[in-house]
Length: 205
Image (cartoon, rainbow, N blue to C red; front, top):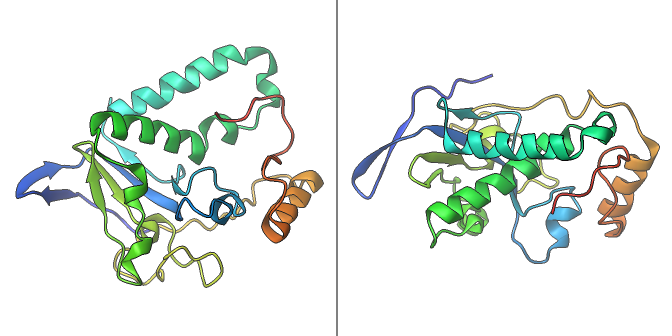
């Protein structure tokens, strides 16, 4: 895995120290909405949760862990049947980042992180909420190939930092999940079908 290294950035001629780093795994326009949910994403623009960095006691970490604690306490009786991704996965982390960044910067729109309008130009990293660096999709999701590329560049691109190679191989094969993915991806239906084995947990909302 490539090293990100020590990072600082400038914005409006004022040096900003980066205290948290996240990278996009999904970069889509909000409309038509089936563009992103047919690929299994909850948000048009969504971050990875397998790779990130934060300074100790960063507010995002506190917000995320607080939400996780509340969810675990509320679902204590059914916790063994909940897939961890439902309470710690990319949609949950993205939801907390949206909440925090748009509250910290009332004029900031999460969708503005999309690099799709760049028309083939290299994606740009952005600093939001003062000290959070959001890398474009090539940062943590390079080498996606041609299908559902979403602007991802080659693993040899200078902006590529880390690449995920597990491809969900830790999961136990599940026929219902496979059917739902086929129905969603190919036919554009089954939007509410779970992307993980059936649990008793309520959907993210």
